[in-house]
Length: 59
Image 1 (cartoon, rainbow, N blue to C red):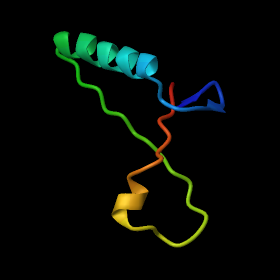
Image 2 (cartoon, helix red, strand yellow):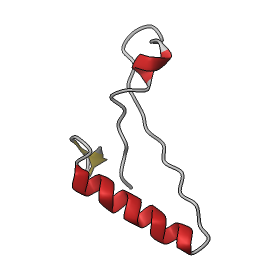
Image 3 (cartoon, rainbow, N blue to C red):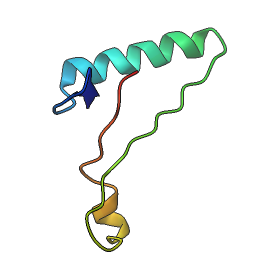
Image 4 (cartoon, helix red, strand yellow):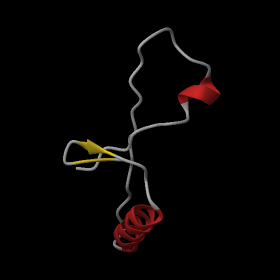
């Protein structure tokens, strides 16, 4: 997860907070879309590799 320009693992606490926020917004009829990124330094990786070690930016 990236927060204020610092990267670190998505902890259980951060994950629980994200799920709670999503649930709260859903109860209001809203939907949440998350976008993650992964910087590539070479050729396109296989899908399984590309779907791991993603960074979830926090805004």
